[in-house]
Image 1 (spheres, one colour):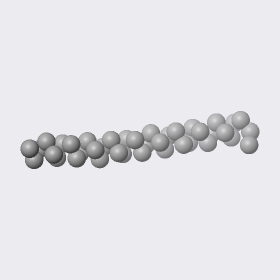
Image 2 (cartoon, one colour):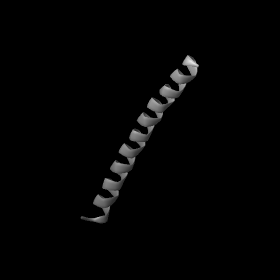
Image 3 (cartoon, one colour):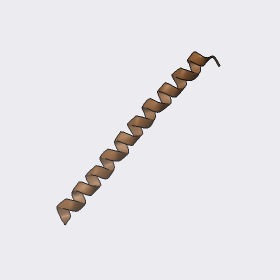
Length: 39
């Protein structure tokens, strides 16, 4: 594996990691908002 291939792999994984964090943040945010609306 060359250094360029390694960099490409790391970039792809970091991009997918950010997408996962955004999705989880949106889910948690909606849970908090709905809980506040109930209270």
